[in-house]
Length: 564
Ligand code: U2F
Image (cartoon, rainbow, N blue to C red):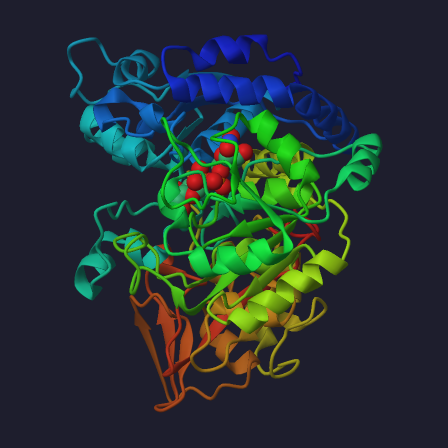
């Protein structure tokens, strides 16, 4: 049985020393300890009757190992990426607070030790049973485990979770499919279950959303913030000088109305990209940045970094986040930063999560090239007042709840029947063209088959057809639902087509990441042959896709209403 623990002493010891990245993580863990502890108490109350199994968990942070080159640690104090460190600090804290038996490794030596591989025999396969129920790692760590566990990785891979900032779509993950259809990337094609990849934001339902946390304010802090906000103070999002390049025009307009602050790293003198009228504080420790965010009215992004934690921190501290819209959207097809990443996801602004899940008045997304619109937006911002806001899924309690739900329910090890048999009695009882409601035949059928337990439960399933050229991500979203890849196996049946009033002239089964789908031109119905390719992402003008949608909790999109 896992018991919540709020003391972080042993965790801090486990994180270790000797690298700036580890010190950054430890400072963060210490700073947020009280928030985690009170969140644990609230979740414990909420889950009162749940028995939680204590798991043996290994966390191997591959990108911090010397063997992977560890390019991040030396940049911690120089404006380099910190988002990954923020997330790993929060992951280990969540696992620790949930009361699991945790081991942390940031070197190959530690990895060997924990896995029981004898020293000096690094490339020998692990022969015995895996001493862990779960292994959280990243792409670098996965590669290291492949090299050092050899063949046995295949045997144990259902226990692995890959922390993957920007996400991996099924077409890129499937080795044979990726090779045949041009989806191979340097990150690999590991044939994992799509939901074994865990992302920083809920980018795609094909992956699990791991996330991180931002500080939550208490009532007194909220009041103080409102009292101390400086209406004409703007803080620029960008701790590296290169992020300010070419922004003279925007800065000049902004400067007409507001006092501009920055936290740009510099060595001896002001970087030339940062104009003299900007008050640059230099890179700040997280805590001091929070203080600055509490005073600023506006937090403004210039387009890079993409999808980082800082905008959530700003919004949580009562700032308005103003960011550029990307038209056309940035993706691996048209932008250097995303090129070679295992996803075709289209990034519609600097921070699509802020744009789509939070929105106005906290988040304003405009075309920065349209100077009139930009000018008008700044004037509008000067007039409005916003309250601090933090989505539940980014609070400590929200993250604990989600990670708890994954640990207790996600199972990629037990063999599941990818194609459950169909009771044809519901054939011809189609309830309507788009959505099968809970009391409709498909669900009666499915929930009667008691041997098919699933998580999310079948009661959450809503079957829907996408429009031509629309992905299942979008199709479900436009019905106020989320696409749920774990439920594809229940709708990958010919009966689902007739339930949606598609008349199949022909029926084929194929490896195609868009299937199950209906080809409008030939009235052909296509079933998915390989469950690893079930994918919410992806669209084609040729197909109307069949989509398994589900409901979700407000503020916790990763979980359906009955998922806890
Ligand atoms: C993202 O990485 P970044 O580290 O560039 O993301 P940011 O949003 O800028 O900030 C990360 C943290 O840095 C902290 C701040 C955030 O929690 O509190 N910080 C600080 O301590 N002092 C300062 O003066 C300014 C910020 C993303 F997270 C990565 O996954 C991507 O690789 C990267 C590139 O897109 O962007």
